[in-house]
Length: 246
Image 1 (spheres, rainbow, N blue to C red):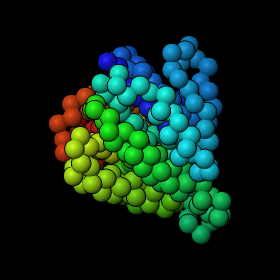
Image 2 (cartoon, rainbow, N blue to C red; image 1 turned 90 degrees about the vertical axis):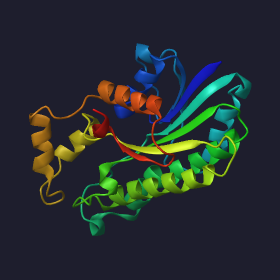
Image 3 (cartoon, rainbow, N blue to C red; image 1 turned 120 degrees about the vertical axis):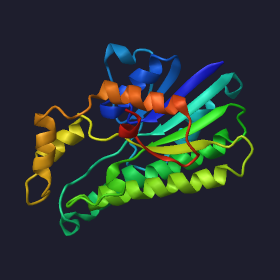
Image 4 (cartoon, rainbow, N blue to C red; image 1 turned 90 degrees about the horizontal axis):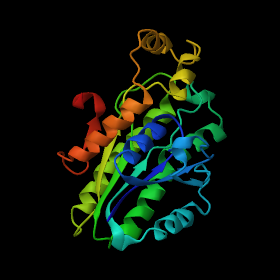
């Protein structure tokens, strides 16, 4: 019997740390991203190239990915909605229509769509099934200049809670949780530090986090997310903060 991880945005940043942790613990990995990762560590990772900002055909493509898995050989399957973007930092009125569409698409519409497809396709699989949504503390704390990011992550949190309520009524339903990874040393953090004080008034705080070596590296956060998943000692629909498990 096999264990599977399907992850969006698994080829860089937090996603690559998650892939490493699950692969090292015997999981078969399917990573869905815009580009391929050519590093040696990804030789045994099945990589699917998809533009997750475009919804046309995305549901069908994800359904096809799931049908490549022999459901009778699966012991456990984990689907992680990890792909996301901070987008353009700045006050809402300074975002263009395309800025708004792209951020909401990638951070909210795509994970809603893929979660729906996963639940439908895997509902009769007789194995352990779990969805992990990579969310953010920004879902509950407003940051100047991050209206789209904060709102999109808040939507993910509520989707997590509602789907959990729904799945509790189904025999062998899917467990779903959201995880806040905290401040991790990724390209997103680099983008934040390059912001002007006019577009993001809290920029100095994030510069200080980097200079004080307070950012978590991607390998460590991947291991921590895997360990939280493995513990599974929390209710369905839980919103979990990695820092609470350190």
